[in-house]
Image (cartoon, rainbow, N blue to C red; front, top):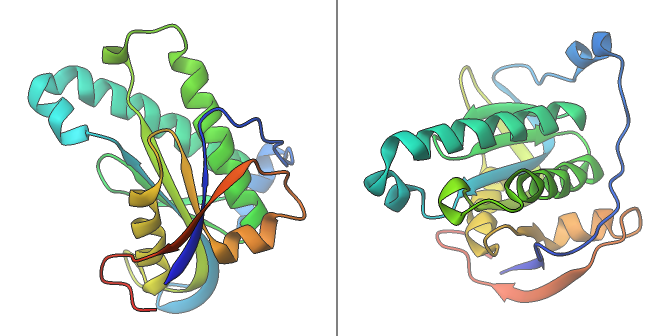
Length: 193
């Protein structure tokens, strides 16, 4: 079983962020392909994306492209790397749990800010899951149980929220002042204890 801490959309959390000169952004650690690495994995997903696509495909695609660009930009600001798009979400990699959580918080705040005062039809809600562990980078993908756990935690997050594994929470709780709810032991689909 995994333990999870779920952030709510209204929490005011401090963001630990370093500003990097643009030349340094290309100096991000890049795991060698075909190699294992310890990583904080962040998985995002748009809530109800398929249903929205069936109603208004063009508008939904416009919204998801806008939101994924915002997420990608935030990822770079927090020294992370976007590993791939899942269509309606991103898989991101960070070498620091603090940076991963700070990025997730910044993403949710920025998404709320950009849609403040708009009609629900003009916005998408997103969920975020974060876990840290050993992952395997191959030629075109990242794999491993830690990626699967992060993906499953994302499904446990509230819309516009963040779900952290207990491991991530323990790593960041001293550095970040989190207003979070303990979700208790979770049974994650296809994840062994």
